[in-house]
Length: 273
Length: 314
Image (cartoon, rainbow over the protein chains, first blue to last red):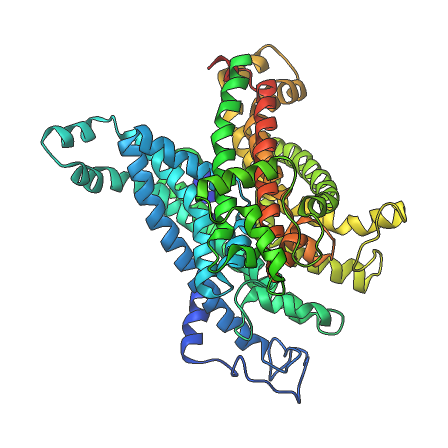
């Protein structure tokens, strides 16, 4: 028992500072950045990290710290929007499938199976091929890939509680299906959805970085950690910091979000540790 | 057993039908003339008319779908806009390399995960357990493309132990080809072992608490026999499902890893086609990867009863 409590504590102890420092960085970046992140300074290309440029400069002399700060904002906003769309749509469809059952359920399940048969990143690639690469189509593509997992989690939870007495009671006092769903089913669905949302946030960030790394994500000159990594490749032997800094940012953020998700899951559902 | 197989097969069919409808429709989502989309901007009038007749653009959409599906079932996925080669041939050419890297890496990752997860669960809350969980959690947070870049930087550039970028086909030099594949395989193995280890550990913890394990111990069996003969098969079953899902998705192309190490695999074909707006190839890759995913998961599910015979009884 003590061991588990210790474990939950450790997850939160490492996760909260990591996510916290990300949020602080984004917050500071809204008001102040050391340099203009897209201003080109051809006099100082590929400068190593030092007093003036803490994380060095890239091939165009742009400040890597400032670019990382702006990149964090772009990546987090895209991930947040993706999660918001996937969770909203997925919860609505999952509630529908689980509550109505029958053909609605069967059809929705077949559709989720079909979408899940495409590797998330390839489905996103195909949708970006169709809609062109922009922030909007990345959000659309990634949320299409992630909605089915939300539908499945919500549906499973609804199925597990729909025959319980309090649902029966709500129906027998004459609540409409909508009232029953909103007042009695939705609150029970929320904890697993919150846990899933943290995982989705991590996946969305990782996928956006991967897409930007592949050159089909956020188009330059706007910096994201993914496209910074992609642009760093030709200069790896002379400017290794260009490859190290954005990667550390992604890994640190993902680690923080995952740990926070683990802590949240243990806290909401102590049985499943 | 037979009814289990039939039931599982029956579940697969609607998925495949929906998948092919989705792949068919994706290209039709692009605004403009589908014939022009499929042939590219420079196409001449005669070729356009030919493709229009082939696609049957004047006929209703369901009829067009059926004729497209008939072609696809015969292995005709159209021709690449860029190179003019048949799409099916391009895909098969690239698939071998991707499949080799993925199969070796996933096998290695599964072995590591099975051993590490089981041991960590057995010594739960020990320093060893914490080390395993900690490593798996950190690994889970490291993007594969960054890990690949760091390995390249370290072993390719700084130490010079392994070839840096590019690829030599097996037919030219088997040793060289293997050397080129070391880093991609290691990168993928490390990346994939994180989630598998966590899965194996948590299902082992569940199994270790079951009565039959206590019973096996009470019979005086050694810990090694209890773990390998009694705990492992049951604990491994859920991990096997996850291995199937992983394998199914990775075989569709490990685009980022192929990009980092400049390997001409299936994922890179897809990315290059997206960048070149080579829609027939995008469509073909998409259909191929989804079918591979469905088939791999079908095979894994059919293997499932070997580890957990209860599923056939249901």
